[in-house]
Amino acid sequence: MRLAGKVAIITGAARGQGAAAARRFVAEGARVLIGDVADEAGKALADELGPDAVYQHLDVSSEDDWVDAVRAAGELGRIDVLVNNAGVLHFSELADTSLADYERVIRVNQIGTFLGMREVIPAMSDGGGSIINVSSVEGLGGMPLLVAYSASKFAIRGMTKVAAMELGKHGIRVNSVHPGAIDTRMIPDAVGGEVPMEHVGKRVALGRVGQPSEIADLVVFLASDESSYCTGAEFVADGGATATHSLA
Image (cartoon, rainbow, N blue to C red; front, side, top):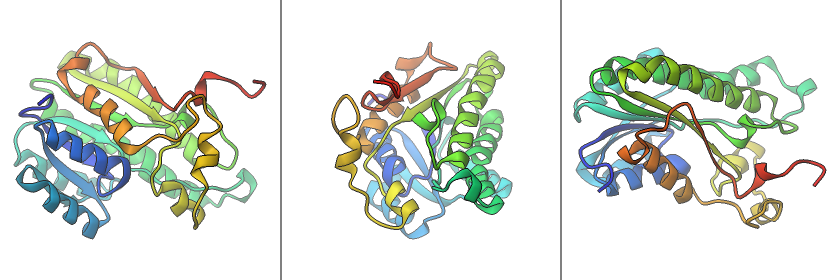
């Protein structure tokens, strides 16, 4: 029970990486607020996980929704962990990217992370806590067709370091997680159809795509006291994608 007694907010938790993290957190003894805009799936997951999980509608780009989510999580107990996992993906060349599409990605990925961190500071300042910001390998290096997504994920990486420096005095640790290709619905939903993920997996050292549960394992570590001396750091789980360069 590595998270026994802890209360966590996980955004984008109705499915994919967020849902995997919610399941692991409850299994490890935490009480979890599942935040998402996918109300039906989020409520179903909370029902599946039982009394230690509650669902809250949370548009991470909304200040009002964040206020409501933190208040609801506070009813579970003192907030110990925030996992800023919610994210959207948009593929288009720079020249063809509309301002509306760019702003949509930035509002969810970047502004959502900013608002979440800002809103939990008062709840964590007396006794510390752990904030885990989900960035991406596209927050470490660029990729064609992902100008908005890469911009948001690089921003998360930078905000994490600033927050770690400012919040360390309160005992609040802030780290970023950088997944590579993970087997979720994110890419198929973004492109409007199925994607042969096994082909993507062959491009990395381990020869496969990752599973949401593998990211959840890393997030549990960062949420737990086992990572008590980790802050402002980048934790990569990408099957070796960033171990090489384009000339290899």
